[in-house]
Length: 46
Image (cartoon, rainbow, N blue to C red; front, side, top):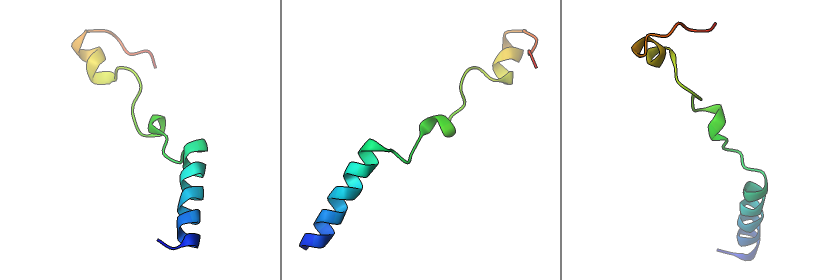
């Protein structure tokens, strides 16, 4: 890698570490869903 490319890569890595662009909470469901409620025979709180 040449100097400018290496520097750009290092800066990108530091920025990604300080301000991550991937946030798992946006993509994964939190808590039990409706299928779990049906299995345990509870009514859903809507």
